[in-house]
Image 1 (cartoon, one colour):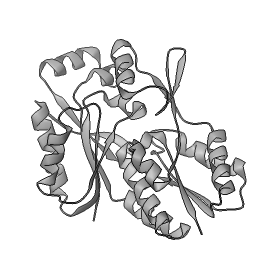
Image 2 (cartoon, rainbow, N blue to C red):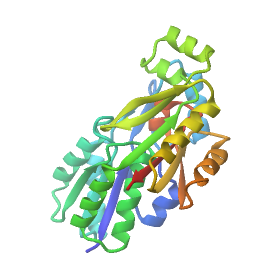
Image 3 (cartoon, rainbow, N blue to C red):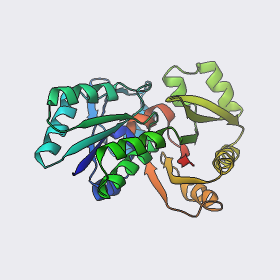
Length: 277
């Protein structure tokens, strides 16, 4: 049985890897005022960040319509899929998983369509999509893929350092006065993901200390697998990866933070995600 893998564009997977593993991506959309854009298609990262910096408000993001998932599922069935596994952005962060579930009902296919909540976003979601796609390529059955990936979801860690508080200010998560004070003190927030939600993981006074803090969290988790780095236009990403390689010698996938996640975290965000054993 051929199992095909579907995800949404919040996964931030490198396009080369998407094509190599035959992953289908259903895109979210975002809107600046009256202009609507399709994630991963309408704007380059540079164009997106330029618009963000010039806009007093953040773009509004929207989950795909159920019909988009229904069409994707129908197309894969038409291409010969014997089953479909869809790995989605955390249901705590987006209505995308709900749209995928409705899309599966609307498609009314005779093959199994299984939906998994990644309980993460960006490459935290992406590493679980990769795991599903590699299992499918190995010829594993749908039940084994779902069982294995669900186990990996429970063992997914995400740590990130934000470089600016401007986006948190724009989306209302931090007040203007507080943002100004924090910026003056050069405070760099650390974020993590807990129970499918973005949570505060700490704060440091400088970017170098923030990145070192993230690396220390990574090292403290000991034996890890499926490591990926996520970043938003970061010139120091190679140096960050080099710090991780001091204790981890395996493959490290690097993904650009896209417009959906980046609109909330801002340029300069850098982080690491992985599975703990």
